[in-house]
Length: 298
Image 1 (cartoon, rainbow, N blue to C red):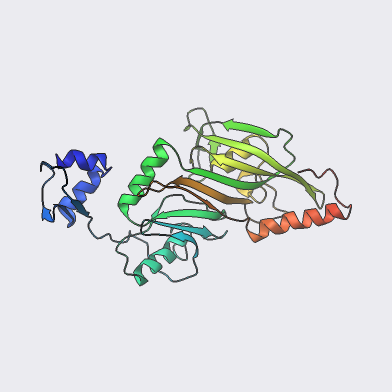
Image 2 (cartoon, rainbow, N blue to C red; image 1 turned 180 degrees about the vertical axis):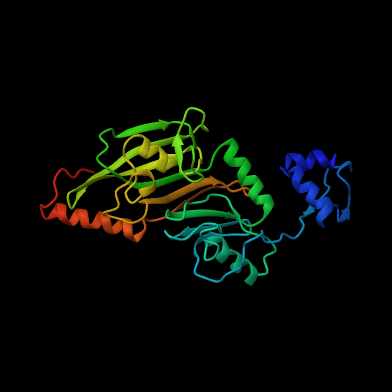
């Protein structure tokens, strides 16, 4: 039955509903059919999804987008620190989603912006965008079933003396706050793996450069987990991080990897550290080479 075939192809029930009521179509051998149609070997099935409309509050704008890779299904970009991923009450304009909506409008691409991997405003690095709702659905399924590999580099306060560790602590909303999260026993399961890359001293301040791998995607997960073990991110005043060396949370998404939702090819995308983070490392290494920094190790 056509309905069973579409289920095997991971066409969601929600998608079938929108096709039925919002102007899409399902054709077998170029003839429109219902989902109860019985298929035969060699039949050709074509799905036409309804045109998408922009969500409320998403206005197309035109600005620079740092594109890493793009095809008919995906858009992989680099987001700078200070730019929101999607519009919010505090940042209704100038977000990455606004600029991508403008790009889609210029190209007559009939879809809204589907953010698969979101970053906080002050986090820099790679963001994955699905170019239609079906691709978004497939990637969301993949994230739930096998995960999308995400690695970050962070600069955290103090020296971490354990080379590798797994932080497996549940995260929930802090009482009385709509923004802040904390580790709490009734929170959602969250896991972050931490590997020390370098221990640094700069201007009398000690910090550790770490690589982090996420296995879950809770709000503020890295920031909460690192603060929980006593090493909040530099610049992260919300979670107690010192701000003398940098004025934004020192966090950059350096890579993502996943299976392409259509071709099933294994994909990996990488991003160099943002300029402000690289500048901190460069400054500390110059001092170390000049003999003005002690106990530096990599």
